[in-house]
Amino acid sequence: MSRVGILFSGRGSNMAALLDGASEPGFPGEVAVALCNVADAPGLERARARGVVALCIPHRPFRGDRQLHEAALDRALQERGVEVLCLAGYMRLLTPWFVERWSGRMLNIHPSLLPLFPGLDTHARALQAGVKLHGCTVHLVTEAVDSGPILAQAAVPVLPDDTEETLAARVLAQEHILYPTALRLFLERRPGYGDPAAALLNPLPGPGRAP
Ligand code: GRF
Image (cartoon, rainbow, N blue to C red; front, side, top):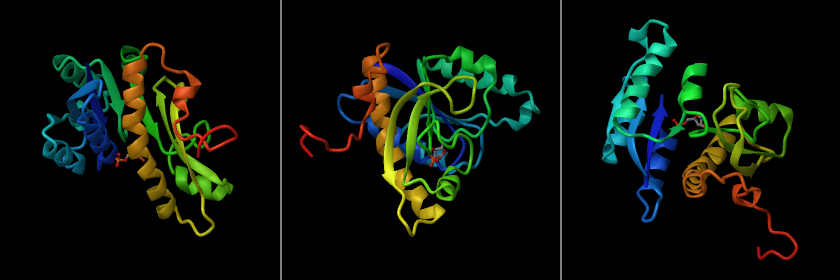
């Protein structure tokens, strides 16, 4: 049973989805700690309500020394024996030091079908671009932002009358399904994860396949 850590910064809905997924019988991991960098993040309460150790290690006291802050996070993770780390709306850029330390075992969820729309404001940019499909991606974290190997994706249609908010809500509902599913597959299949058949979680019905 792998020990999982979660890093988040805000409302923590993906963190909560991971906790709910991990509490399912037979899930191949347990969440050892949820860490946050914002003292009043609503996600802290969400985690505690689910009986998980939720700690805040604010970045401000480290006065811009990103790596020193990350060293404190890293210590908290090591102390709890965390082996796999999930970023769930963690809104800080990571240093190469931290990325290297967690290389191959740090996952992130991003609200677009990468490699389209890395970075911020993904839903507005999807509407602006006129794409008909949008979605979310779980990927391994590498040094270049939102560019690591893709583990799993879920797609949603973009509807003619969509606003940024309606599209974001449709994608978020998929994020909450995708992230625990991708984590389960990652933990079960490690280190062989990456089989395209496993990564395609929402295949369209096609010839020879039951709808
Ligand atoms: C999500 O859209 C996630 O894809 C992105 O940040 C947002 C976090 O939302 N990385 P929440 O805190 O999980 O509700």
